[in-house]
Amino acid sequence: MPKERISIDMDDVMTDAVGRFIDLYQQKFNEDLSALRNPGSTLQNTVPPDRLAAVMQFPHQKEFFKDLPIKEGCQEVIRQLQEKYDIYVVTAAMEFELCFTDKFNWLKEHLPFIPWTNLVFCGHKSIICTEYLIDDAERNLKSFTGTPLVFTAPNNAHLTEYTRFNTWQDVAAYFLK
Amino acid sequence: MPKERISIDMDDVMTDAVGRFIDLYQQKFNEDLSALRNPGSTLQNTVPPDRLAAVMQFPHQKEFFKDLPIKEGCQEVIRQLQEKYDIYVVTAAMEFELCFTDKFNWLKEHLPFIPWTNLVFCGHKSIICTEYLIDDAERNLKSFTGTPLVFTAPNNAHLTEYTRFNTWQDVAAYFLK
Image 1: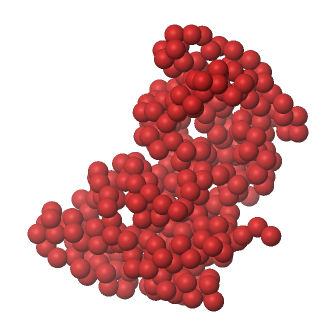
Image 2: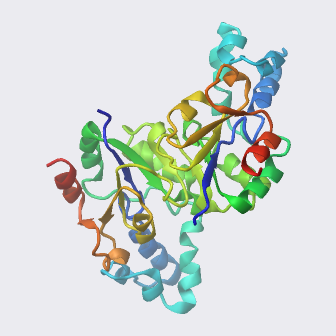
Image 3: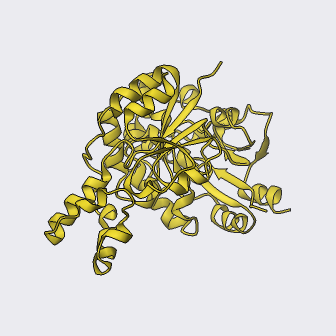
């Protein structure tokens, strides 16, 4: 029997992209944006309106995605998952045309055991057919045809219709029980 | 009713990648490799064995995919298809890590009317679920769960089990009849 397939998002699932926003905000405006980590926070409801356009541009800048910190347990759990499942990394990279090499290098460094055949840089994830998707973004979970699973991030605190993972240990408990 | 979705491969479907191999071979070995265009030709049965490893490296070099010529009719037909179908560009870019920007820029230049949401750089195409796939590679057609459609390239002359397109006019005739 073929292994079941799990698609896993990168930003704010594997990586701490919220932290990068906070760092860049500190650099640019010399102010703290740690409130972006609070449940329910989005750029739209946290950043002052006159700065929002500039902050929305951060991920379009060179190196936004370079060397992002990896979340605790991510590497170990994905390595364990790979023994029982086919793991695909599926990231909406096409929105940020300067991110390709940084994302690819990040994957080579942190998840070198996932082969190139299982990496996907895409836009809409609605055309990805795997049994599971672990993602933080409502739009991706909503359009997914398999089992959508939400990985907790500030901007998805309102979602109640999906099984929720707060940590990578939760992911392990769900799939490796 | 939602539009049906067509995934379309890039290399040797939209672009003349075979021509790039011939050009680079001429540059490197000062010999003609036009035989690579003959039906049934592959690198393996056309390039002398002692040069094969070097030629297989060509697409891993910087700029192999830069400014590849577009096939006749490709742009016009895709523009017409887009009125009736959701068009996705699905290319196995992950095999060649230096190709991302060149491929992305090629798409911006030649098919600017396809939004980033509909671009996919991937490895295995077996996880792509659209109604149709137009591709030249047997491995992609074989694992596809919708209707696979072969676009003629030298290395797929032996395939008889798929509807075949020799030109972009054939694609138009099939979808826009």
